Image 1 (tube, rainbow, N blue to C red):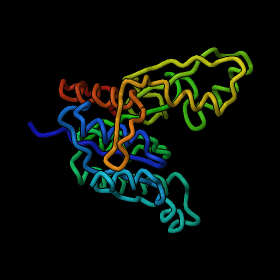
Image 2 (tube, rainbow, N blue to C red; image 1 turned 180 degrees about the vertical axis):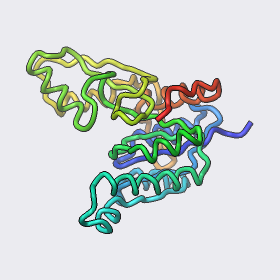
Image 3 (cartoon, helix red, strand yellow; image 1 turned 180 degrees about the horizontal axis):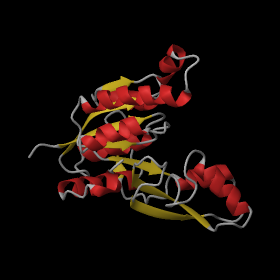
Image 4 (cartoon, helix red, strand yellow; image 1 turned 30 degrees about the vertical axis):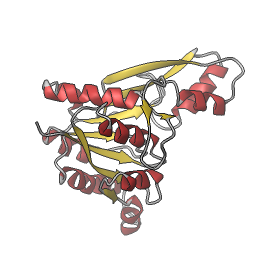
Length: 236
């Protein structure tokens, strides 16, 4: 059977990407291959992680579109960017697209193109379903806790739809907020909440380290859903 083809979208350090790389290598995601890593930031360390694993990469520069349309509508510029992004992604014939720290809201032209090609998109968002969609979710949740509005936060892997961070959840994990802890302490604990049962090591660094369990678990579920034709969850 041919391996499931994954395209991963990234913007930053790439710890979630590394979890996927190692999980594919160690068969924690069985019979799967990352066919390309795409970044919207040229200096994202995630690109180096991909290169170290001999995975093809692409830098898709939004700034170029902004410069080419200095007086243009921001929405129009973003949609043109996303149209080409869809072309780049679909050229590799992926089965699933995983947003792993991808800091760019995907617009309708991208989502419709992938939906028509029957390619689901999943995303890791640091909030519980229906809460704190968009940027700085952990910081906003922390502020809400200080105001006694909430008692816990969480993370989810969800399908991507037009409404930001509102697609059907695949994996949900809750995180208690401790009295007296700082935002940085919460963020550090938050990034290890996924349970240190997924032990991963890289070829360049054999010391064991913990990575997100959630993104690996969510990717596996999305693959299973794809094989069982659970397609309604990712329609744009």
